[in-house]
Length: 212
Image (cartoon, rainbow, N blue to C red; front, top):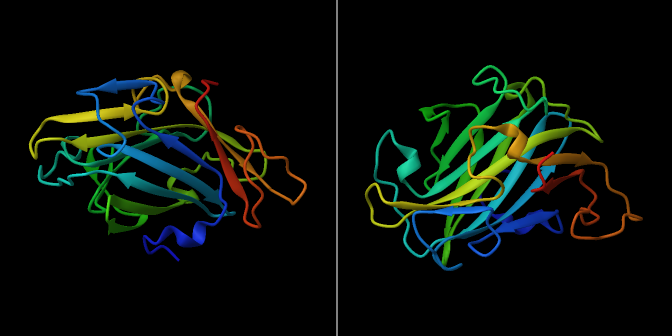
């Protein structure tokens, strides 16, 4: 169920992003309490699921039509993993504001199922992306897609913001500088390491920031 409550994500594989781990930082030097995120990923035959626990000491969503100036995240996929700039035919850049609003390449969109909850130290985002939104995505065990995300922190309630990038310094292009998301079927024999998803009864997605 997509409800913004992340307690049911259990031991799904996760990655974190904060200033000390970011590939690039723009607009300031935020502390983990001001801007950081724990990202998790799962999948099934028809959907990619993402869960983000965002730490943010002041939440601002106050720039209508310009989500890149508000608190939120930009999440990008190169579904075919071909490193080609096929925008907007194949590649996807979704912006999800802290209030749950969704945008595709900066324009309002629909089609994603999103829930958010406020927390004592920020907010959560729980996202379901249907496969038909990314037709070339190989949503099967062993499938790989280009993947990247950044965390936006609106620091002044206006147009000033900091950004933390998971890999590279863009979520638009070039896709060759992105990391990847690998779809894996997990069993109890899986060994746990920084690059291997934790065993879970649900197929999981490994996200790695190494350009591929």
